[in-house]
Image (tube, rainbow, N blue to C red; front, side, top):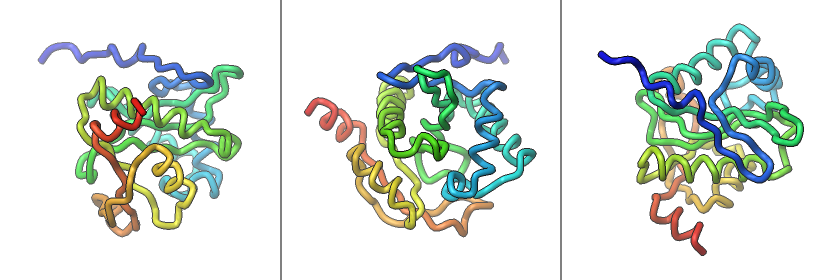
Length: 186
């Protein structure tokens, strides 16, 4: 077995206002604060103490190490502030290749999720070669449903997550690479 590919460590995607990059140790305080906020964490695993948030953070870093992709840390270019996480995600048993999002409450309502998710979808389709993207959305999460529609995704129906999340209600939203490309060209 050869040395692991670590090119992902230096990956940077820039949008007008955001820098998307793999998570770093200095992002953990923002991650932990986001997961400690009951409202921010409501649809991304629920409120968590710092020690539990640490394990989730390491899971995301591990996804980058093993799969070569995972959710990006979202950094506001103007301030350098960590705003949340978003991007490609497909753990074992997941219902499909997902681009998801979970931003801190202070970042809500500013268009950051749409800006970052669009860049992440471009990257997933172009660099990962994905032919389809889903979004696993709680039926009560109207803000994420609106974002999925803004991105051009459609509700495909109820979905099921793997254990231990099998009892979490989700709807699958998504679109194909060709649908995404047609929309981006329009």
